Length: 215
Ligand SMILES: [Zn+2]
Image (cartoon, rainbow, N blue to C red; front, side, top):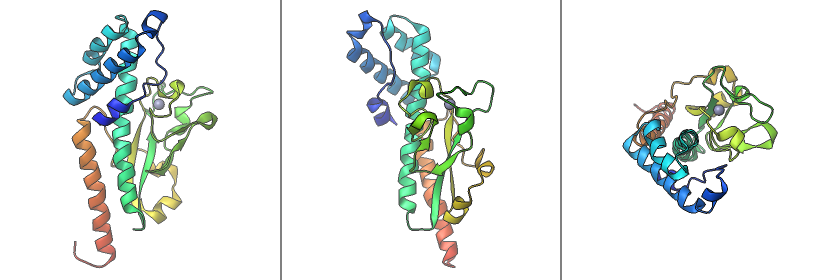
């Protein structure tokens, strides 16, 4: 999670001319504050207040950055462990799927160049990318690299364990609001690891059951 925060590209950060000269330093400060915020479990308000100092006390901009970047870093953490779990399952007959979940309210973006209403319920394998409008691809919400999709996005990916056959059928409604839905604003690091362990445990248990061994 912290590695993700440090390597985070901060897409689409626009700065005025005076600030542009200090771009590298500003990005460094933002990354540092996002990482600190995630480690300490600070609220968006607290992190935004710290970041505001770097962007000329523009609190609105600081809040946009905080929301967007914290969201991205969290989603990326889950993405990494999901990909690792799916990798482990190759050849077992089981898969880890990944479903785009929107907040399903009227604020979910649905413009010509970014439509997350349409993405809601779309399911792919945990190591595949989602196809967004206009040929844009994203491993998970917040990571398309395009501001119209990533800025202020509240969507998240949920992951589900199932047999490869079940996955092939893929009726999209079935995947909405999965059992293993990644709730936001929880301690991301530990939850991340716990999820990964749970997926692997489920996989092993199903395998043993298939082989007729005792669970
Ligand atoms: Zn979204």
